[in-house]
Amino acid sequence: MAEAANIAGGRSGGCGRRSGYLRSTGFKTLRCFSGRRIIRPKSVDSIRGAGPHKIISSGEVTMRRIALCSFVTLGLLVGGALAQGSIAPEIDPIEARQAIMSNNGAAAKLGGQMVKGETPFDAAAAGVALRTLYSGSLGFGHYFPEGSETGGDTEAAPAIWEKPDEFRAALAKFQNDAAAAIEAKPENVDAFKQAFSSVTTNCKSCHDEFRVEKN
Image (cartoon, rainbow, N blue to C red; front, side, top):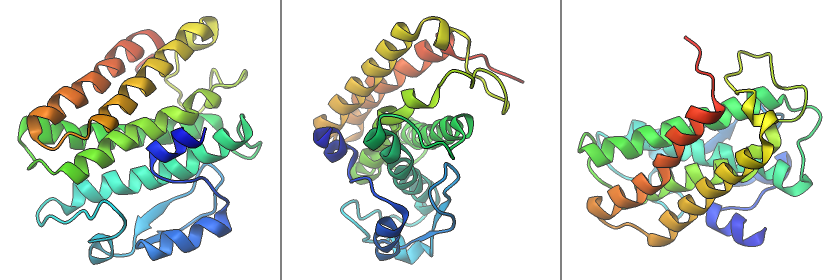
């Protein structure tokens, strides 16, 4: 468990303990942890040089801010599930898993733009994208309890509950591939393409089997 937390880049904690950290790195906690926590940077300048990632690049701040916000939000969201082995009763599992997938989408978009050359490659931002994808996998499986098959405009397929072992195996593969990509520490766009592809190929196969896309 400690190793997983280290790879994800932070430790889980309660609202009070975490809020000071968030303020120190330029983030404002808008709501307490309940599955709806919203975190936003106080300003663009407050992100520059904050934390180990030091995301600094004029013209690309917006996408990198999305990635960094996503990573911090995910760390808080999955932390409770990892610590308890289940989700807190006040958390809506459908909203929680949709929030994780939304953050994964932001990370995948940033990574894809760097791979395609639409955004200049930045090793720190690439690392944030990979860590966002990894951290989302850590507690994701806890957000599919019995009774959450429908409602909330969910796109979760019945196969998740019908074939739980296969679903867990798919999550484990995604997590392992993401961890390996992080450990590879890609420092150039070619290395990142390989690492990023090894992670995102899991997305299509998992979505084909376990997602029912709605219009």
